[in-house]
Length: 103
Image (cartoon, rainbow, N blue to C red; front, side, top):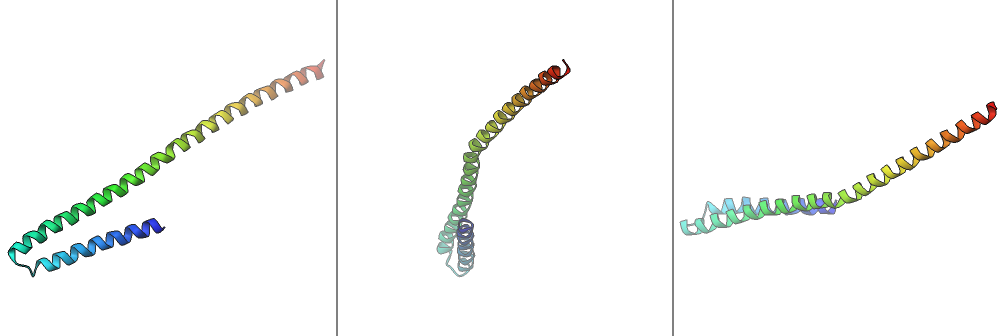
């Protein structure tokens, strides 16, 4: 939750800086406007880069979880195989007991 709150604050900060810069650009001289435009583009690229980094981190976390899930699935498959083997053994024992009872 703290992570998502920090992300929201960061995004809000970037959005506020962009809005303020846009507003300030209206009152600048032409040379300053060009500098402000460059700064604006850099801020947008920074925001986009931060979003891409966030997405990559989320994907990395998902990928880090996948081996654990694969191991869990493997363990489940082994347990199911063992359970089936035990069921077959139990069925054989029951069959032998039934045969002995009928003799």
